Image (cartoon, rainbow, N blue to C red; front, side):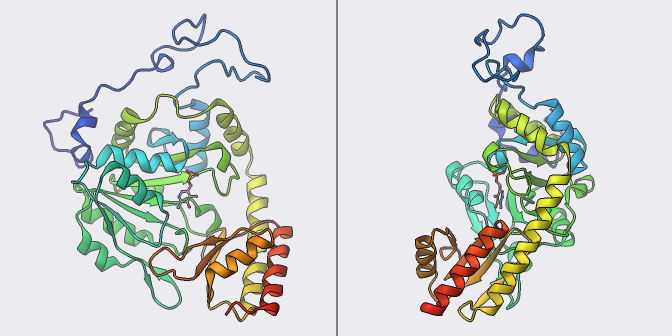
Length: 364
Ligand SMILES: *Cc1c(COP(=O)(O)O)cnc(C)c1O
């Protein structure tokens, strides 16, 4: 920690309790794991089916090989990367490190991912909503509204955004970082960036120490079940979050699966191009259906549609064994349904369902 009497545009934003606490020092963090390990009350025996993983041992808090591979894949310095139990944990850590209950507000731009506001509410942090603007074709940030809602400790943006699929320009993010330096951090959630043409904004941290990027292996890397996310930020932010992260957030089997997924880009590239193909088919099919009032294809592995009766469509889809997600509860999204892009076979089943349901009983 830097000398606390000096002003610092990042450390000064942390909750004083977090700066003051003595972090938990785990056995694995205090000593290397060579020799006879009698320092962590573990069992001396590996369980059945261990396959050399040593599941009887606590895992490394930040497994160095996984961290190295992630940093390489995301093209960022290792010191700026914290591996988390999914991005969900990254979101929660940021709020717990920077927001005092009833004092330090968080800005969200709905329609958006629900975890930003939920984690803030659990912490007791005030939540200000600056809804996106539907300009008739696209969703975009309300930049004036955002400025008017400042100051905030954390501003959560998502690009491409869930569930609207729109992207945010790096110029907008940079300008926001500049205007809240010393007052707050800008968090850009890039959970869906692999599906878009856009470049990650993680390089901008060189110029903007109050920018935080979230990445995940849950979507394009097909590892939602492993809970592996990365939080990329200035080393001061990483240091603060390491004070409060759980001692052993990353289960050994998850780490192993993460390493396998990162070993070669081939599988990822193949799956991305297959999903792009299926998205094209789905979008073309939806454009032919008169019951679809609006279609936002977006830049991610899902599309958003508006129909006359979202609940009825979702119920009929469920009867056909297809689960879709109702987004009607979000501001501006009445009767909107989010559809994830699936395999070729799943897309065929979905298109058959949509065409037959429309023929029998038009959705409009
Ligand atoms: C799916 C998703 C994530 C991923 O969360 P994990 O905890 O890493 O699985 C993050 N942000 C958004 C906006 C998402 O839609």
